[in-house]
Image (cartoon, rainbow, N blue to C red; front, side, top):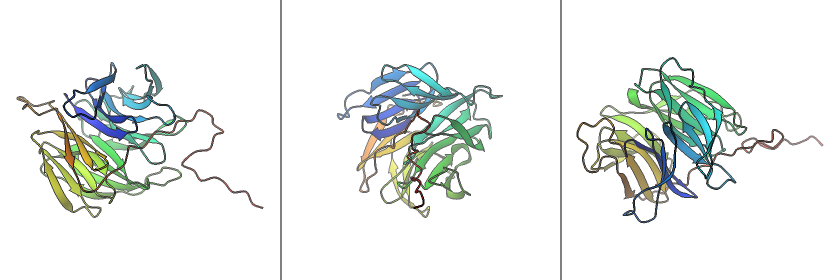
Length: 290
């Protein structure tokens, strides 16, 4: 792949994207089989998440915004918040949270400093810009309870941790979780112990950091640009990229797996509702006074 990212373990199997080629791909159970293409868009495809109760349908961060991607490959736009950006901007990495919202970042094609943002797609399909001034946002990744979000600003070598209000999805004051000096933190995944696996672009490594930010272990790859990670039970899946390498090696752009001793969980789903009167799955039911 040119720029393999957005790898997720879902009820529909392992899916990933080749961002600049606009391809949505899936991997079979046999690692010797080639990746199979599910869809190809005419714009960059940053990340997808499954849509609840709609098998084969995905919400996608694509082009300059968000769309719903149907099983036949057709799309329905939700919003294009970066369509009028001063500099050419595209969507990048993204994921659903445990409450069923979808989050994704944007970045300038030339990685212009501070030109990126983080967006949230709520259950009714409305899109809100929740952070700006980011250069290359990657992740986000959420803890299992949805109350903590990790977000990398890759170009600046930092991963920040944000508290998340479970009802309103508002972000609290962030703290620096990890600073990387020898590469760029990219895709991330949180395991069952709350540790965070981080693909570190430019180093050929994926690193596991404990909840307090201490480095716990390192997985080394025969590829220089790890870009995305996910956990499928006790297997760590890793995407890499060839883009920008003058002389790519034979494994640059490949997908790797590594057995780990702490499992993860399946990707969360986006819960889309079109009925404004339907209950919000992230909001507790209101109790009437007796």
